[in-house]
Image (cartoon, rainbow, N blue to C red; front, side, top):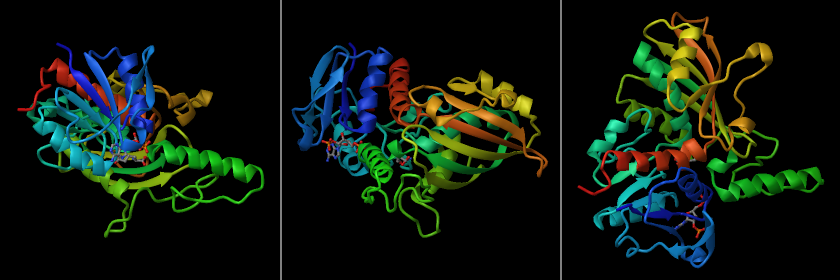
Length: 339
Ligand code: A2P
Ligand code: 11C
């Protein structure tokens, strides 16, 4: 029998995309139940040619539910994911709440599907900026062993959620008509600006987003020797995160070696034609499933170094798509049950 699937946070930016991805990929289900807060109970969300009615997420929501895809914020996941798992429902969680928990696999299906085998009921979906970097780093690490990565990100406002999308829209409109702007979601104006702060600052001076990239990379790659240092920046783009990545490897790889390794890797498209001015851009990556890599070139300041530019839709591969791919892999491996 196909699973009963709950989408928790179904009215949010990621939740709505999850419903779209389930539909587009013809995900096998016997029922889809959209859930959100009491504020949204009774609202309708589109799915296939129907409208589904949103129900309030409560402690009793998971009886008879086989699989729950969560994207309703960290606090909601922290509270409800264990309740769901206890009711026998396997959770794939898009928040940061469970990612670094030793009992929870942190999975990018193209990179470490084998980690699903030891799940105990809660599986974590990595941070969006980590996911797109992982699919580009994995084939390079397998071939030449990555020693160190220096990454700077250019992240879209949709990563923050629906309210941030509206804030950028409103600020652009107001500024273009000569009106003053109010920053509500972000600490400063985001329109026509770049904010070198994503999430809160930690004691070490890095932001939480930057430390997610550092710690999640090690867990997903299963290799504590990979060193990552990150600077994460919010830019006035609606959809699609971009990343400038510098990689130092143990073995030498030419730019052509990297192009052919990446071209063979599932989920990656190499778009690297400088003579035509063709390289990945957020406006093209938005709405697509692939992670695009371009500007691949040797770092001429070190022995074994590569620079590249990675773009992916943060709401799709960075969130909704990766979550649904995890769910598909669970089904393929017959793992939709809480051990
Ligand atoms: P709601 O629309 O009812 O507030 P986004 O990341 O785009 O802001 O979306 C967040 C999603 O998480 C929304 O679907 C939101 O529902 C949902 N959500 C937020 N808080 C809760 C909660 N306490 N219980 C259930 N769903 C929640
Ligand atoms: C952003 N990466 O773009 C964040 C969004 O840990 O899931 C996702 C936060 C997280 O703002």
